[in-house]
Amino acid sequence: MLVIGEVHTGLLQNSGEISEPACRQVLGLMSGETVRVSRRPIVHALSPERLTGVDCALPAASGSRIRGVGTVVSRCAVTGGRVAQGSSYVRVARSETDRRLSWSHYLARPGVVEVLGKAKAADIAEGFAGDGAPRGHGCLDLTAITGRFLDLVQTSPLLNRRAPFRMPRTILRWVAETGEPSIGFTLHTEQERSLRLTHPGPFTPAVVDLCEDLAMHDWLLTSLLVVVERARVGATPAAEVAARLSPAVDHLLHLWMPAARVEERLTPFWESLERRPGFSRQWRSLVDRVRDQVAVHTLALLSANAETGGR
Amino acid sequence: MLVFAISDKGGTGRSVTGTNIAYRHALQGNDVCYLDFDFGSPTAGAIFSVSAVARGTRENGLHEYLRGDCPQPRRVDVWAESDREGLRTRPPGAGRLMLLPGSEGGGELSALTEEVVGRCVQLFGRLEEEFDLCMVDVSAGRSFTAELVLAATVRMPAVPFRWLVFHRWTRQHIIAADGLVTGTDGLFDVGTRFGHDPEVLRDRIRFVRTAVLEPDAAELVGLRDEQRAWLSACDSELRELAGRHGVGRTTMLGKVPLDPVLQWREQLITDEDVLASKIANVETAAAFDDLAKKIVDDNAWEGL
Ligand SMILES: Nc1ncnc2c1ncn2[C@@H]1O[C@H](COP(=O)(O)OP(=O)(O)OP(=O)(O)O)[C@@H](O)[C@H]1O
Ligand SMILES: [Mg+2]
Image (cartoon, rainbow over all chains, first blue to last red; front, side, top):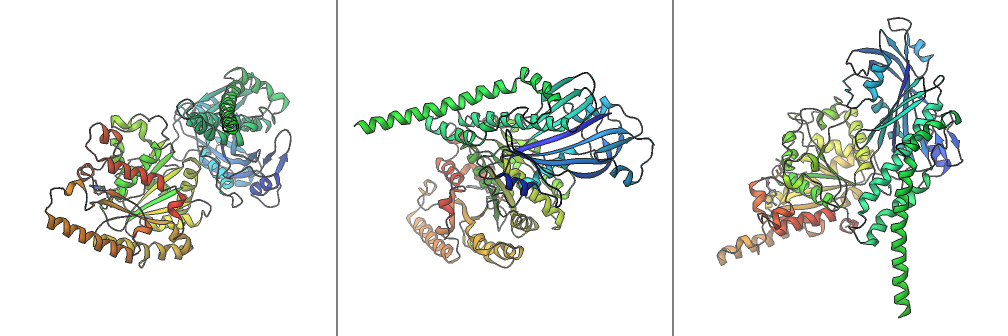
């Protein structure tokens, strides 16, 4: 029917970026299974996947009660040794029967939640990702599940918790369906976003990679906006502005690599978002602003030094 | 940084001083959240002038969250939701100021279970990721709430925390504040039992004197010489007593003068109250401002 998922993104709670071996350790939440690492064009480490069993109501915009039983797939990722993510998704499928089957049935279909009874995909999609979607008690709570996975990373004893700046996590809720290609990205609150995706052909985990990649870049952009706002360019002395911008220069600017890990077949979706709302365009203009401020300050310092040196 | 506000006695000025410190810290450009863990009487909403949560929130309060009855506690953006004109817009350069209200009619915590401690750890961990300062009103005296906080912080060794013990400048209050820290079932006692290193814990506790009337205060100008001499003698006696009880100058982070406005009403002291309407004293605002700087100034917290 459809796939729904959530990606939570935050600044890794460590003073500096962590090395590839450290990423492996932090993400090795389960012994026996290995962390997948890709090194180009940026180090990206992905934890093994874990399942959470659920038997609960599914979100529904109409408010009708839809019961789903199955498992949620979750995982964590660290990009550039600096950005941490928790990610969960479920494939919503119609059940062959109207009653709940044994757990072995559901465990044989990891990441699938079967709907008992009638349900419309559009109702679930809107209930999950729509604006102000009512999320009642006892409803499938991907936010809680995903948040806990990100907590696992952030509370790792290998991290020193001395992050260079404070930044809220962002939450991206996504819905993917098969059909005529289209993509829609919506900002809701300061921290919540939603993504509606229609892709040709059947769902594959590459769609999850795409959502995680988008979520990370949205977080980078959001965070850089916050850092620039906090710096109060024009209202504070240049030295102070430069000092407030420096964490962004040190920790964020080099991480921008849109679509780096996105499967060829899905890159048109990124390209479409580059046209509108234009992620990279906004990013570049912010980066220029940051670099200009820092450069102006450096020049001022240099000329001040030259003056005192010449005297 | 997590900062826990506690006092031995009720009515010492813990909430009023704690909220004003949080407010000043936000004005200084930091992102701040204030957690009302005074579950018996969650009144922080009233001090921030958010009437919708003046006595706590009906839904998704901190108490409910800790009991596991809601996935996340409600957040109130003070800059957006305060009823006070002067608070309703975020001043330029100020950080976020978020109130996490208690539950209306929530009642004291009745027990300390593994689940409750786990939820508290999750809450503190996530807020600390996001805010420069998390100020927690732990309520008065020895309580499950204080134990909860001690149990939670021992599980997050990398997360920095500090304690502020509020007390008035009287014999009884000085002795009681010392007792709360060093006495039976006091902070050291319980903290050590839960696995805190007593030496480390000691370095993370400072005292704050509230509603202090200095012998040379303007309020005392009309006094007779005999009265002034008597007050002065009292004050030095108290200073000597405080020193003996480890509540003296070295362990004191700061003091807040008695302010007529606060004597009449629990509220935030804004610059407008001081400069425009002139109802509050400059010294009071300055004391809050100073404390707001000192809570994060490592020099003020160096080992004794
Ligand atoms: N600096 C001050 N000058 C004058 N009055 C003050 C000052 N600080 C606090 N007060 C007043 O003292 C009373 C008690 O303060 P507050 O409510 O903050 O105490 P508390 O310790 O939080 O009490 P409780 O334990 O009941 O929660 C209030 O009326 C408050 O306005
Ligand atoms: Mg109080």
